[in-house]
Image (cartoon, rainbow, N blue to C red; front, side, top):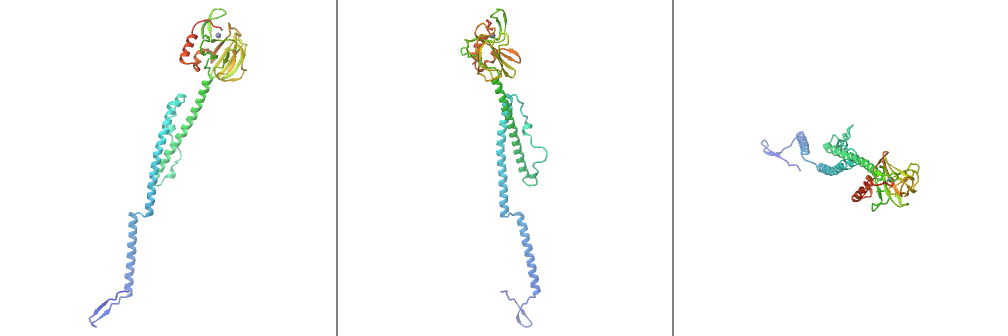
Length: 323
Ligand SMILES: [Zn+2]
């Protein structure tokens, strides 16, 4: 209930009620409301500038957390990039070098993506830089992995070729020769057993009883198995590819057919004395690009260095060949 105010009337010598006019009351009320509204609005405006609402505080915490997570992802990416760089280094310095492939230049491994700006969609935000840079690094990492993967495919192919090559070239002795006593005469000038004249002997003679097994010295295809070459008697020629051919002469019997594919160590025939031969033995030749070369340089396949030296000494003795 509103207070009733009085004043002293000197004329009537009595207290009288103060009666305020209605218009004045209304004016006061209006001024009060407008002032309050203004004050309220100003207060809200100022506090909202400098103070965060709970909602804003939550959002900014989430943003900070996201930035932290991006940093952690970038650290993990550092590790992944370092691991990839290690593989790339080995790839260039060992694998590609070993298989005689050119190293892949750094620019090719690290090339980003040219052309249109792939990162435009990240622009226009406070954290655009962070997101865009992280994506860029990830793209480069991915590209590096693809390049490395393709390089390893290439290396695998080259290794397979090299393996094929190593399996193809004639690299073992054509007869079992464990004590190395069967090697009777080597490549070089020897006395002809029939004419006793010194002439060049283009192969190696392995002395062995008739019927001793003869083995293919490398993978290849049998090109000939006949006796229509002068002097060789029954003989086999195996084409090993890469320019190599091996020849086995004076055979007693064949164990293969022409055009048959053989593996190193396959039994292809038996020792005999057909053709121009003094006694049962295998005459063995190796051709490279049509030229006859010294077969002894190819026996690393099943000889230790000591054994090889023994064989080398025997093969270089200028004795009489068995032809
Ligand atoms: Zn010979």
